[in-house]
Length: 264
Image 1 (cartoon, rainbow, N blue to C red):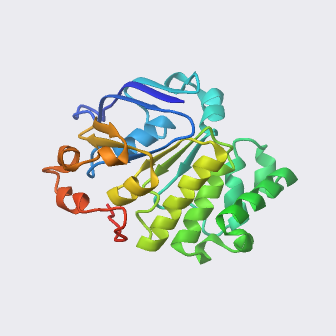
Image 2 (image 1 turned 180 degrees about the vertical axis):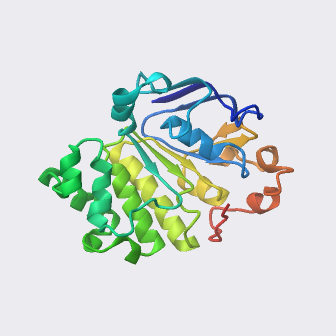
Image 3 (image 1 turned 60 degrees about the vertical axis):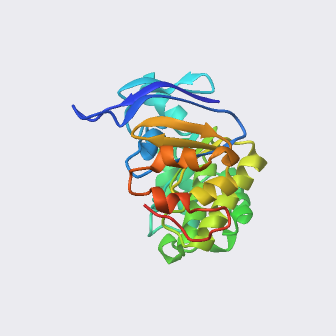
């Protein structure tokens, strides 16, 4: 379980981006975070794996307090937090297999990675996962030769290669076309169930959040103001999350069957 208590993130003397935030994410769940640009969604995810350092508060994953970890202990914990990025974050000149194996960098000696001598068990697992998401035939292809949807699938497999205890996805569909966007969301939903893995997704498309996640958390100006099931996200809740932000009208029109993507 992920348990966040009294989390604050402040940059310099500015107003906090995250304000005394409280959130629990149980095992085997798919939770989406919605809200207008600047609500603090990406900052929240990056605080969890400490790509961004929290100002104060507690982030606990399966009994381990993440905010106090140093050096090697942080490295060991961070490798169990899978991250999927909006911009894919692949090394374009490397093959799909080599990019996928980057998910094992926290587990293998540096010389193995430098010489690209990956353990056979890691190669076998990579092929298994790539087959599962439909990209095994691209194992030897350069990453920059793939489509956006294929590149994001590489990012998903790379994260799963970490053998994560939780999967964080920061706007994983924002760079994709509408059809591919839905395919990626469906894939994350199915993988969470198959692998008994909690997934926390920052997403702009409210229709996809309603359709593919079982819980929706709404953020506004660094605070959680909605937490419930998709059916509970009514007009009043949408008003609370988006009203006056400039994204309200577009977001509240989303329905589970609307294939038009909303991007940041």
